[in-house]
Image (cartoon, rainbow, N blue to C red; front, side, top):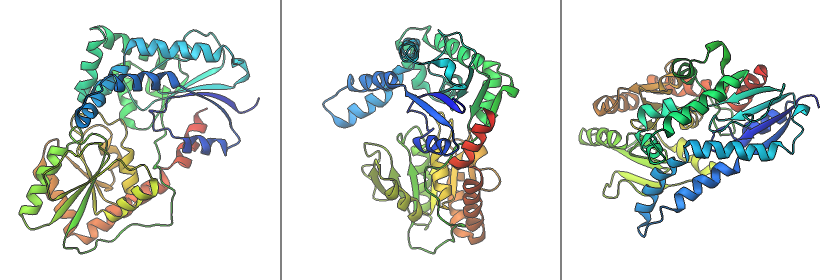
Amino acid sequence: MENKYLLSNVDFSVVSEQSFNEISKKNVDLDIIPMQIIWCFYFWLIFTTLYFSHGRWIKNAEKNSLSHKSSWTFDNGIQWCDQVLNYKNIDSYIGITQVSACFNCLRNFEIETTFYVLSEYTMSHAMKNQNAVVKALALNGKNSLSKWIEREIQVYQSAKRIMVPSEYIKNELNNYYSIKSSSVSVIGYGANFNFVSFSGRTLETKSKYQILFVGKRFEQKGGDVILKSLDILNKNGLFVELVIVGPRVNPCLCRSDVKFLGRIYERQALFYIYQKSDVFVIHSCYEAEAFGLVFLEAMANGTPCIASDIDVMPDILAMERGFVVPLQDFMMLAQNVRQLLAEDDLYEKMSKNGVVAVQEYYNWPAVVEGFLAEL
């Protein structure tokens, strides 16, 4: 059938159902295979860490869940694909797309159908900042890391075209996997909010300002640096409250200047929190950031952003969409927050630039246009 594609999808990816819906609007027939086997491994590893203390269990589970990144789970993903694809008429598709390179859906098939990979993550990227990944793989055998990367390389080398969300990941593929830049296309990713007519925000004078953090792991995303900058701001007369969204357990139990909201699954509720906040901050230190979707969410709401100067963050916040701060520099972070909340013109410019970037580029309709152009 014309415009019929097979897509193997891993739900860990931020390539959401929203993007698939956008593709369907373009008269493209998607046959989506959910990679349920990978979720099974993930949840099994979480539940095997069961502990009497809820907080201790959550921390152990989040750490040990990384053990699903092993050559054994990689190969089981391949076997799952074999079972599913044996019931498919592969030649009836004009293209096959795999989301993520944590399995190889066509390793045991010889076909002429064009193969594409949509990837936001590489193991080499994770190794740079996320030591827990390496430790988890070591539990599965000292050769697990090299075996994983060997399988990852095979996926990339077998693809006609690799689509990634950022120039950063494109460079990773070129530098660490020897994938030619001409084989990789940057298509971006989109904010998971419905757009409203909005041109940015103006700075309001308040007795207490609100800094927002959204992320599952507070410590790995620079929580200690953010708290140190918060201390500086409050001690110097700029009263600021930190709002934390995402972790299951409150990482700041004894602080009156921190409001913990936990996990928020309702998009409209999260939308309201972004709009109510004055500045959005994440200072990733130990956890690799392949792509910062939360920055797009903040930018879509006109909330100026501050990030650490690693991975993809400088790309997202380029062109005066926000500040980037050297790793561990809590003094500079505090200075940037103070500057944003003191200079109306700067605040409004960064707010507007962020909104424009999301409206013109970092949105799913634009991403889908780029995706389809590569097929």
